[in-house]
Length: 341
Image (tube, rainbow, N blue to C red; front, side):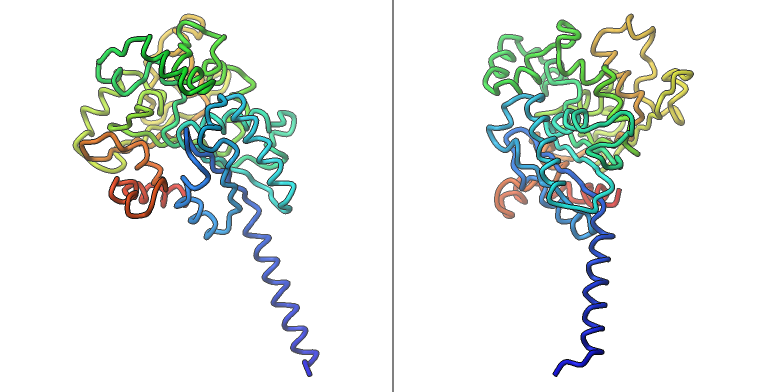
């Protein structure tokens, strides 16, 4: 026969376990994969975060060919997925987002939909961290892998490739912000209040970008840097593997200009001159994003083949053996740091 003392001890143990779980699970981290990706892509990071006690939403709303629906539709689906997840999980107080590649743009659109400006909350939760990994913040129309090395890609070829990826291809590769201006979704996402204020609400904004060998999202668009700065960084750090530079910009208030917001001359885009209506649209995009305040972590993977896009996120694409053969595991030290952040 079980004694009263044993029952009391058991109830206390159960209560403590429930309390501990509740304390550990007040932070939701939303993981958004990239083009043609799946919820398994960021498994290495997800496992780390869950071991640390975070609730993790491994987004599956835009998997594989569903990622062709466009940034607007993909972002809306991700926002719906967050609401559905929260309906099933109580006690969540904070929310963070990690967007890999195209997933970073889906996340940026989703937080616009989830943001309540009067309260500053996102999906009724306190915004914590926002991180993108090799995300094409400026699109890729002017930032293909070949363009960055001075190899001119015919615009007709870009248009053809864009059409093959549906609405997403047109958003990323078909839209030229310098020509379309406010008609370009990518331009509006980088310059308009409705997209910038939700990002500003987060406690921190970080990005990871590849210095070299990123076939999909080169440095200029991943870290919204001017071409001269890209060349300078490559000249200084191309022979060095690992984290080669951390660039920091601080949030700009109405009584500050961009140069005042830079710490220790680390801001890459302070050379932009003139007011916003004197800038080219692409320069205005850089400036507006920088004024939110970012920590930009620039990473270099050594090698011959342009595999860095999957290495930087330590993605899980195939079997463990194939992923390791392709070098995708080489970014795990970075993801270890991301989990700590």
